[in-house]
Length: 330
Length: 283
Image 1: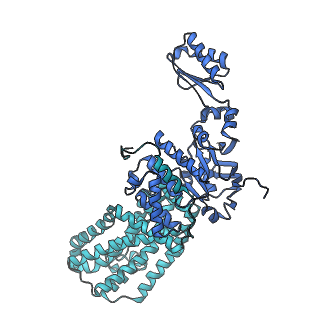
Image 2: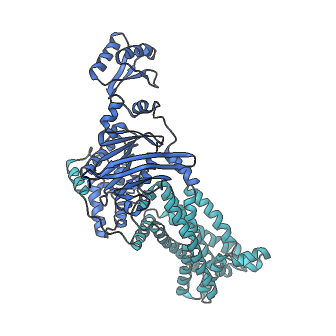
């Protein structure tokens, strides 16, 4: 009414516990229609649980959310008819062929037999899996399976799509293919909530990002704002001789300020926003006789974002699917 | 990775990109699938699995075939005087057993779907909620039919001649399948409660095995100790076996058939809603 862009997702105070663990601990989200929104966080941060609540697969313990204007609990069926979910475990049937999977979903969504077949053929071609259409999905590579999974999610174009870690475990080429698909989806007007562990991925694709840790949103903003908040980059240096690290640490501290010692005994990094100053620091190391194996000046990693935002690294926590298995058994 | 053909081109070709854009162009949303059509689609899915993995049919047929051969020739003489006489008694019983054993696989299949993640997609679709369950059981009925046909065919080959002929056999098979439909809801419930497909399989057989043996499938209850005999007399599987024998011989008791149908209805009334509830609320 007020002329502002409508929200596709509006969540307030979502909470979900599994036993004693609060997997999601009061998450608020506001996702604009037509945007790609990234939920960024390490394993076990609560991203998957949040998405499963928004996709009506899980009932929140507290809080509420509206997806495309419909309450996720009271109007779950209306939500289901407008969204689609591509889960972390590629949700396709391994014992069927790729084509059969797509026909199955088409029929379930109400397409007539001929229309479901035609749509399957169209999607198989568009996603580059036409050649494997008649093969059982259990023989697909990870990338093909992912693409089939996404194809299954758009048999009937959804208004909102949940993509839960669509590129985890994929090789770079398959990852690029999935990224292209996500960009095309966005261009066609679909709103996307993208869960990812990779800052790079959120940076490439998302218009807005929420950083999630321990079930809470700890930072929110555009990729630019987020990176600015942690310093826009870092200089990574690996030495030829680990014994020279103390000296390198001293020089980098003088040139760039903060220094972070990596787990690799020959590696260290410094926050560094300015490429010229980074180059100068490397030159200074070299002049002081510190042997450099390689160096790079790049974006902060998720680890660095976490370090900056929370003071602790994005360490491996208890993975969410383990939590869910426990829940199943309970 | 070994399955990607080496010739597959790098990222998305220009032609593919056009196809991608076209495929993504918003398609009108079709009217929602009816409950029946959704369930039948899941039944079709079950058929496809049998087509792709026919080995699973061997599982459910080889065991009963072994039982027929073993019991008829090993124990037939001792129990009924001759293998031929025993075959007449035991064949309808083994028909019941083989179909009921197959019901455990309904739970195993559902658990497999849950652990593989495909259930998440089904649950996020706007369909009649019990459709995946009902449809899978409809598909399983075809498997029951195969198991029943193999056993009856084997019996006929070994010299079994049902008094009521083919119509009797078909009626008996229909009755067994209706009961199996009711019983399989017990195993789908189990399938949603247990952690892995093999756990469902073990627990399922641990239940169905003794219950089947403690019936009149293999021996006349009069030969049993009185406490056991009392149990065997009221075991619905005994009544089902009696009704099947009756239908195959042409002297079925209406009461038996009524009890079997009522048991199937009761199992469905209790375990179908329970399965649906667990399916709907599982996390």
